[in-house]
Length: 62
Image (cartoon, rainbow, N blue to C red; front, side):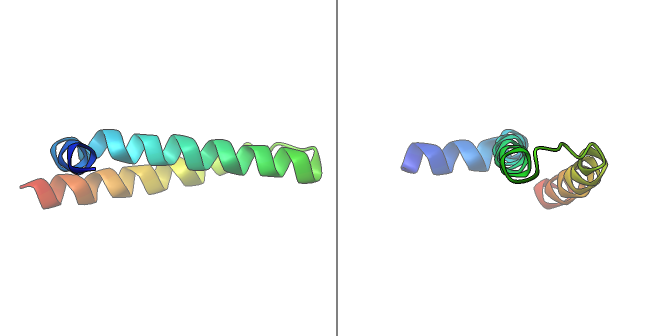
């Protein structure tokens, strides 16, 4: 557990990308299973949230 905490502290960008990928994958799967549809507009929202989060991480690291 200490290794994971240290890695997340040293590489916050990687942890953000892992969280985004996993949550997007889960969201896409649920949407497809429930509605048999895929909403492409969700990528713009995800991209915008990721850019804001990257800016917050950058500001915290300074």
